[in-house]
Length: 501
Ligand code: MN
Image (cartoon, protein in one colour):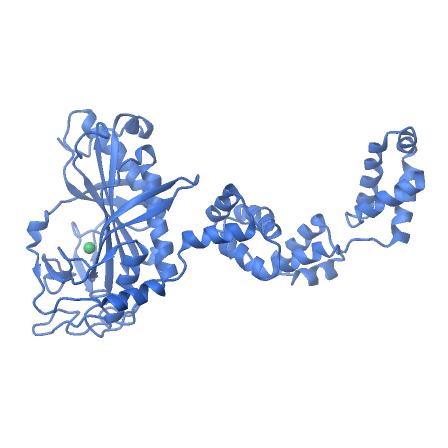
């Protein structure tokens, strides 16, 4: 039975009747100056086949040399993922023929990875923490890049000819492999996304990679299988290859759950295969029937000696690890006195760094949060841009809060000042001066405005004198309106009560 003519099962229905199990392999390109086994520079966007040496081209007789920085980065990643760092480990040849691998094998690690048996705690959008067990993190090299020209799909089938660029061949990779991720249930797509997102943040914090998803620095292969109940044996899995955005990871898992449920519902068999992800249609299609490990005829790489990271060196690296994102988040939440929900909203909105910088520039945490999560989030949303793309700096937001704190402007005027900053009219101070936004607290001007409002509203005056003090709000409102919001409301109320009393 073809698996691809089958009807998709509604997602909610699928996860009611099947238990999804995930397995995620993440490849991250390390940001070293040179490649994994040779001195060719690592470049992005260089002319094709200009960043190569005989080693990256797999020329006969060329011998590999291990990149020490890449090993250090792999150890950093392993430690950050709570892994054991192997006392000794080895490279292996993973044999397969494809034009982007000029040696006909990829130098990887097989049964002796540099790091193994770790875990990563992943926080979901509602604050639930989900632990993902890590089986291994191993070092390997990237392949070159094929471009298939002339076909409708950009794939090799139907192409007129293909081009190969070996600039990427040999760039150091670390591949992180999870153990089966069980127990996520209906939240499996969300867990998958949060896991890859958390890893990306860690790579950046560790400084081992720019981790730019859109450049393919981080790529996820997502394995999905279904079983009738959590007690059943694991079902047959598919592996959707090279998914390279957080959103796509989530969508690919969701799609495979719906598709596999459709196959199983009609008594079909899920085929163990790799699948391609199609961003436009939000669907997957069959790739190749998945090779088992033995098809790759792994064997130890004879041109490289085993690697034995000295224990003192590993401990030095452990001691020098930067504060990881989850720890930093908890520390900042404590410093700022935010609730869990406030902190989560902040992080989900991508405002953590901005608030931190605003506080560092002198703003009170609550005020910094208020501006970034309120007015500025609304503006960013309506303009369809990220918060960090807005034309206002954390320093300017801090300046705005200082103007409010000093009483020179109130909240309403501050919003106008911010509008001016965003429109490119200058700093908050400059906008306040240029637009004449300062609060009027000069008694002479305020008394005149109060007298005018009293004269125009004799009925309100009667009410206040009759004991309805809350009616005073109407007079204050009239004064605020007459002064275009610039009156000092508290002072207006004092003057008003003095006048009537
Ligand atoms: Mn790999």
